[in-house]
Image 1 (cartoon, rainbow, N blue to C red):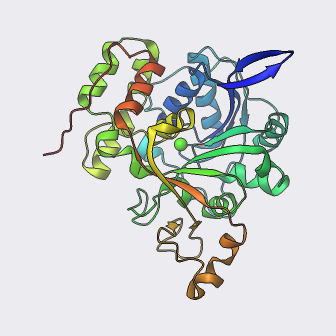
Image 2 (cartoon, rainbow, N blue to C red):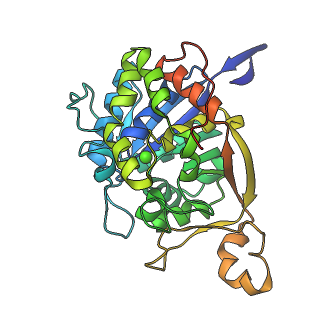
Image 3 (cartoon, rainbow, N blue to C red):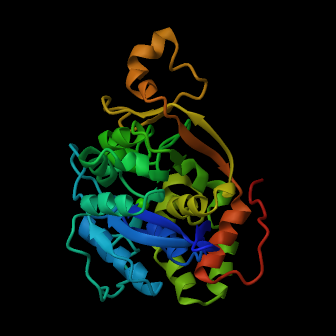
Length: 346
Ligand SMILES: [Ca+2]
């Protein structure tokens, strides 16, 4: 909540969010969290090719908005990465990105404007806005290229993406959002926007919804609770095959929870961060200067473009899983009694 002094009175106003998404199953839950949060006004949703093709992403975003009773405008953006061949992740989320349960077409259509122009217009109309990115960074990179002043008008950019100092999920070296369009990711991370990086490592282990959490969610029997679990059915099985962990891993909702309540991130630190674009082996890898050696003489030339801006990325290393899950339960109407997390580790 933002407190403004208007006409001699203190007025509490919701914060304004702009969400860029490749709307698949975990994005859908993240959108529910933002659209259902009383302290947040979602000014626009922009869609990008990623987990699913961009038109499917827009359709899914419109459907989720409809479930939430929201008429937020949805814009269609880039249909492919800046230079790379597009690679979807329908193997993880289902052909429609929502587990292929035959959800009906949304009643509304996407807006006519391109998402890149919508980002520029929305940021200029709402200086100080919070930008939350849940997919490849193609749209945001294009917006920054077209209007560099956008960077200075965003007060906080929460990026779901990357694998800081850990394994990747789509290659051994990289997380999907960074890997799909590494050049765009590099452009955004090298911009002057204040970035909070929420990597995929934060959605694993006890942060994933386990069987008890899923049953707790379904017990509430709200349409949003059922949808949130159901649309992630394919993703749950893909996650089991990928990691051996049984549960629903929700990277985008965790990023959204941190965007809404920064204190859900329990430990973060600022570093120079760059994305690998040259190597086939490590394409899209998130390189974090965790020990602060980038400015040293032996590294300075390679890191010069990153260091030159003197803008460091705030990397989130850990979260409060109990509070994140309770934020999720509240958003989908399943908060019938707060739950304590019981570790399933031996
Ligand atoms: Ca996503």
